Every structure is written in C-alpha cells, then in structure tokens.
Length: 356
Image 1: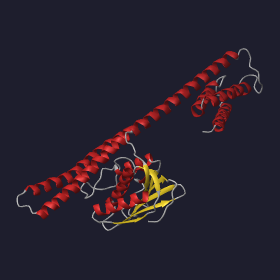
Image 2: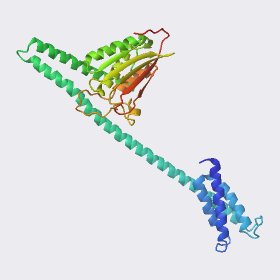
Image 3: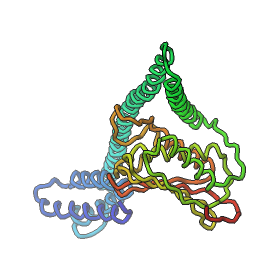
Image 4: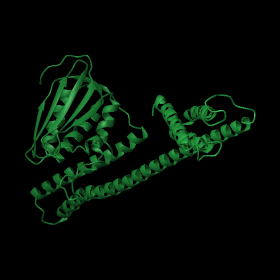
C-alpha cells in the first residue's frame, strides 16, 4: 500500500467517526472518546503507526470543535487537559498494540508459509530420492544381468568362437555403460563439492562435435538418423568434457526420440560465440517440466521398464560443464510431441571458421 493511500485511510476513517459521532451525539456520553479511540486503533491496524498518529490529532481537533463546550470553537480548558492526555495515551498505546499484533500475525503467516514450503520441498526431495534409487537399481540391474548372462554362456563347454565373440562384444558394451554411469555419479558429486577441474586448451568444436556424433551413431546401432552441420571454430575448453556434454545431449535426445527419428547437431559462429544446437524430433518437453529440465534427477515421464534409461543427471552435468567453460545452455520445445532443441553458447577464440 502506498504512503498516500495509508494516510488517506486515516482521514477517511476519522471523518467517518466524526459523522457517526454527530449522528449519535444525543446518545453518547459527554465525551465520544471511545468511538475515536476505536477508529485510531483500526487505522493503526490497517495503515500503521504514522497514519494512526494523524488520526489521533484529527480526532482531538474534531472532539474539541464539535463535542466539547463551547462547540464550534477551539480551546481546551484546564479541566479537559487530563482527559486529553488520557485519550492520547490510550490511543497511542492501542495503536502500538495494534501494529505489534499485525506484525506478529504477518510473521506467523510468513512462518507458516515457509514451513509449508519447506515441508513440500522435503517431500519432493524424499520422493525424488526414492525415484532415483529405484531408477539406479534398474540401471545397474540391466547391464549386470547382461554381463552375468554373457559370462554364463562363455563358461559353457562347446561354446563356438562366434558365440564367444558375440558375448565379449556384449560384455564390452555393458561395461562401458556401467563405466559411464559411475563416471556421471562421480562427476555430480564432484560438481556438488566444487572439486571438478578442467584441463583446457584450444579445441576445434566442430571437430569434437563431428567425431562425437559419429561415435554415438555407431554406439547406438544407427537407430536414429544423426546429422551434423558444423563449422570449424576454436574455443578454450577441456576436450574430454566437451565430448561428455555432447554425448549426454545426444543420449538424452535418443531416449526421447522414437527409433527412426532425427537428431540434428549444428555448430555456428557468431561475432564472439560458438553456438552448438542439438535438435530432435522426439516427444518434446511439457511446459511444467521445461523450467526444471536441468535440475538434478529431473526426468521426463518414462516407466522403469524402458529399454534405454538414465538417472536424470546427464543434463545437470551439461549445464555445470558449460558454466565452468564460461558459457550457458538453454532449451526450447514447442510442447509434448513437438521435439526439443538444446542450445549451448561458448566464448569463441579469435580464429577464422570454415565449413566442414
């Protein structure tokens, strides 16, 4: 409430008290002070102590002019002075108590809101922890089950050389998956404690993107169409971390894009930045999830029996790694079923660029 509005309330309420006092003059005692005292206390509750002081002054003037003999003239007699001091003291004390009570009520209300918010956050954190543990168990069970099955086949007598090669390939693929899972968990812990470090050097972003996309295309068995349109742009970065964040973005796009869908990676250069975009034709991101998509353990709606999972930490790592490089990452989506686009912006070194 604005300052002028607060004092206007004091004037209006005091004027209302005067009108009521004049109407009820014949029914009131020699002094209408209780009516004006109540008005001052209400003013203090609604507008604060300053407007209550103004209401006190106006009330004294109105009582003196309209209700004390001789009426319609100003002049407080010695006999009225004790009443005046008592009225002022009661009005100020009541105003102070009203302001204190209102402040205490507001503080209690704020504490209640904070308590409810804290309880909701605790419940959300507990639910997220339970979901994370369930997903973690699923993510560990799948590759470990495949490893156990492959080792069982390798341990059988009469296993052909072709079967052995196939089982060894399964073992390598599942162990790599476990390795990436553990590395992501370790990186999240390092980021939380600020213990992650970068080994930076001039890096060609276009080359890193092209090689990572090619490796990802082979690793996922060409289930999606992964296209690249890049230029050669130099940045000061940790090449392993760049590969990691690009791999995480590609993995995220593949998880939410049906087989046969398209994933497109582009690299562009602006005046002072390199812009990397990863666009997919997948299920998109709903407006409720979009603001939280980079939060740890946040994931889209997928069942625990999905073929390709994840812990909900890949995008968190992407954001933190990009921030450590002095850049930023954003996401856009037209909604569910309309795909999504992640955009990374990094400071570019002063080098030329050429199409690849």
